[in-house]
Length: 312
Image 1 (cartoon, rainbow, N blue to C red):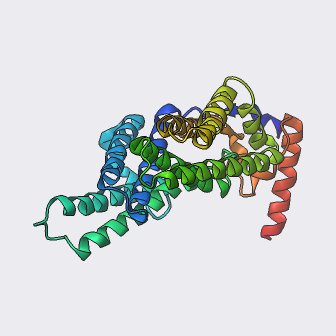
Image 2 (image 1 turned 45 degrees about the vertical axis):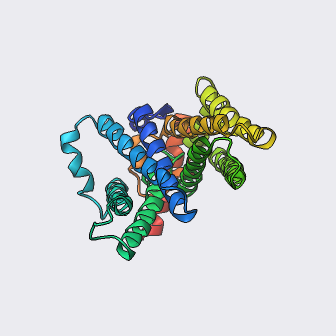
């Protein structure tokens, strides 16, 4: 059996910076539009969200490599989170554009209550766009580091941090009630740190491929991006600025955006693949803890036998 295994720990190489940029732009844009609707922010923020989403869509098409076949992304909506996410993004773009256009075109047939309905439908799509990347990655059996219900929470809170950063940058040093934005931004950063801590501790206890992912985040070169970029630049420094230098929200916002981007890149790059036979197995392979090839083969056999008994 051992000959059928390649137990070498290796990271996924399919996704990198381009997908990280898309996840960053789509998450920040959807979080910003949701804040625009819930907090009744100026129209500028809604338009900025739509613009960011369009730029992110262009990056995603570039990442796919074959834009002419991108229509296939909606072909598996019943089973694929990628297809569902594509529908959510299209819905957000369509409803947000109609809602914003109603304010610029008084003669449009969808003004009034209909325009308001479009705005709230766009807000719902924005929430779903914030959620779907976590579910999309968690659906990959071959990467235990992603296969957890905590990942969607990480992406949602990070999207809120990115949206708060945009608000801080746009509001600048103004004092007309925007102190609440600084408080909200600081709270979202603190929440991100707490969720990240719980997530990484849980993954490290799983050992195997998930534990190796956590170890990668603590070793160069990825440690520079995670600890230096996500934790220090994107979290600790903005918190310090928001607490001690309330007149410097733009600097804090830029740092927060950098941390949000690097967080998504680190999550992707730290994805360690398990051997293909384990990923295709019908049991919960995330329980496997061995990295030695003989122990891995033996534990795989035991888990397979246990699964067969349970199925009978």
